[in-house]
Image (tube, rainbow, N blue to C red; front, side, top):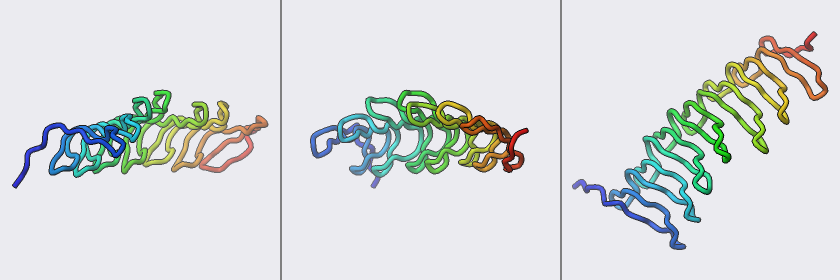
Length: 174
């Protein structure tokens, strides 16, 4: 016999902090809900099935309610279109995910202090297409990538020497 969804329910953890609020079915998180960290901050907002994050649109959060990811989920993983944010709320990836992995889109990868390390295209989970790699805010390569490798473009080292890449081969730029 099928049971209708229970009304919205709140579940607390062992220390009395809110752990989940949302829809239940057969005593499991099922439907729209909000999952909380042990300190009471929101961790995830979206769809649940059998007590786990499931499919549809959802949001993951850093502390203090700052959105870390918003997009599509399938079977509890990031799958489909999504946007990923840094803690300072700047977009670091906009595109498609496949099995929780950044797959196709625009990537702005940052390092310590928010300095960009790579900005460019991501295809099939790898750097593919035009991109710029930087080190300490200075570009070290700009050009085309193929399957995560520098393919065609130019680079420079910290001494200021320039190199060129043709078909993945590096040579001194004259």
